[in-house]
Image (tube, rainbow, N blue to C red; front, side, top):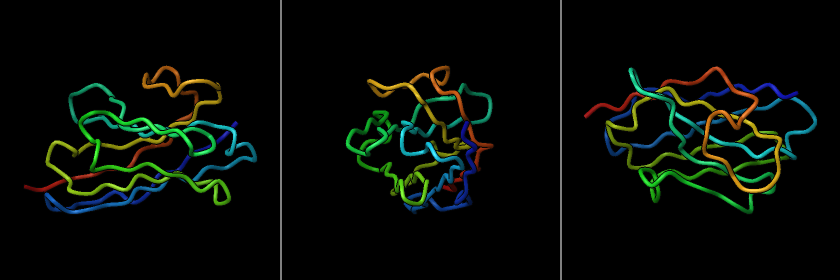
Length: 125
């Protein structure tokens, strides 16, 4: 069992930066793959980025490659999403999620058992 709490969202101008954090409780954080998803108003939840338990493997949605970076600190039980050069289309509620299954990084929301409550990111043009 793991509980996730996101923070770091807010309002930023296009071209600006934000760093989202997701703090996890539980002693098994270091064994979970972690991911960020986002959901804009009226749209389905979509995959943003994922990272393996060790941090050695990462996967990104094409729309965020080169602008968003996922990384983790297992000592702090926290996963981060550094977002640079933000665009209005990045505006959404961002969720972190945990996957206890091993193997390849997954991009479907149904693959993740644990979710945070979300943090709002608003990008003004």
